[in-house]
Length: 490
Image: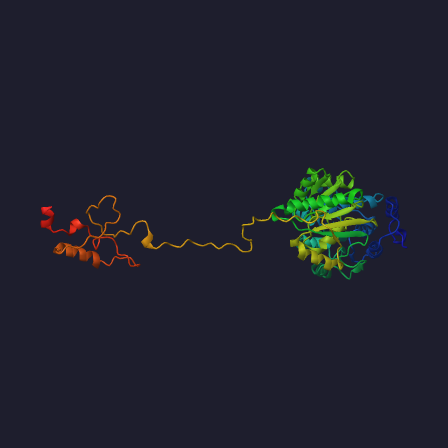
């Protein structure tokens, strides 16, 4: 077995490695370190937790051991997708360079520009940064990248997922063409292949594991979850999570719980704390100081459960994580590999459990296709979920919705009052007589009465159903039909 002493590293670096307790390099380190020390570009592909950080940190320190940096002109540049990963790389640099006089600066968001400007002005050998904050300093005229000799891109595929590829391409254009470039990632998407073909010159490709594979020492499982009712689904899902944690018992010393959305991270963390679990959230919307305190508490064993978004899925090295719970199925299959890679690190055993609902079926199938294996099913700890309350016996099934019907219209003949003709007479009607009965026509009628009667019948204002309009037609009151002489005599 190869040892670090056989990799031509600086003796002071070897001393620091020995004090850290490492004896033999991992496969990715064994392949990448010699190529990097020769000055070649390197394209390293390995699953998470295999030691990619040391694969570029160790040769970088060895190469920079001689020389001195000038103000605002770093000699090397390490790009990381997240603040946490950048801070972790800085810690590794401090560990391995403790006997080498090299300076470093960490440029991440959420920290004052003033302190970072002060460090840059003194001159740094290693500049560790996130793309956004690096470009902020450059645009403010505080940074010059003309003297960069080695450029490292860590977690390149995560850079792609977070939309940093345009920034990466711009940064490449700001550095010298003669620089040495090191690319490290767990997966290689087609877009990353395009970048490497453009900016890397005849790289040494080191691929020590099949792309997007999970470590064999991680036990995997999935609960196929279905809520009893839509409005209860979220509550029941959080209960399933608590039961899964309880089922692990003392074996679950600590765990990272991943959610897809930041709002769910806060909700799940609050729910766990409500039921007595020691949990805290971490995601991109939190203040950097709070994120740092939470992560340090988790690393130090003071915090048992870290509820996180994908900000903690890539590159974070917490060797003693016993479990990973995927509260949500990740939208991208590659993220599943990175999430569960937080456990089972450095040769330890780990366990990863996922909760998959009906709407996650498409993403779940993509995960099994990517890792080329079937994830074992775990029984739902809730048992058979009780169905929603049954509808009353006299209620119709939901599938057959009752049709909305209108009550039939009554014929106009049955209406309470007949229609009244627009032309009304000034003659009074008898009280309590809704419709005066037609009187028999007298033997003689005056010409006035005939003309009045004809006007009523010839107006044509009659009901379409055959009922004649009430007016001066056949319903003319008797007293109107009397002649003038007869009325006078009466």
